Length: 205
Image (cartoon, rainbow, N blue to C red):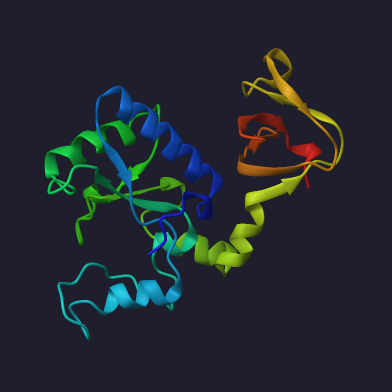
């Protein structure tokens, strides 16, 4: 299973960065486990407790893209202490931080069945990928929105208010940027050369 955070949605990458930062402040030894999963990897997990040995760990089929991991919007975590990787008390402490306004993730521990305490995800699209499948049809189409190119020279701003905000840096025309999200208010949150900030939606394509 892949543990490459860079395979995740840019917004999820940012949320993980915030989560790790806050956990470190509280002395929690956060480890990042499974990130993106392929169809085969998800099918193998689904087979456990069904056609393969072990306990049932997921209700999501791989071939139907029913796992959030297959859409790059989820991550599984663990405690980086041998023998205590999935300690319940640790998961609850991390969940409290993750669900706070400062981080803003949703938690699989709130699910009814199966309860998945190591699982954290972007809640914008709900607790299943149904909305993503309906809107985009495929992961590849969804992934196209993760990146953009600037159409002209612009500025990366620190806050959403843009022109009233402090400038972080200049972004030349033709620059590739990672898109976290686009607001209906006409701005986009992006990552450029390792810096997070805001630009006008009209300057990217």
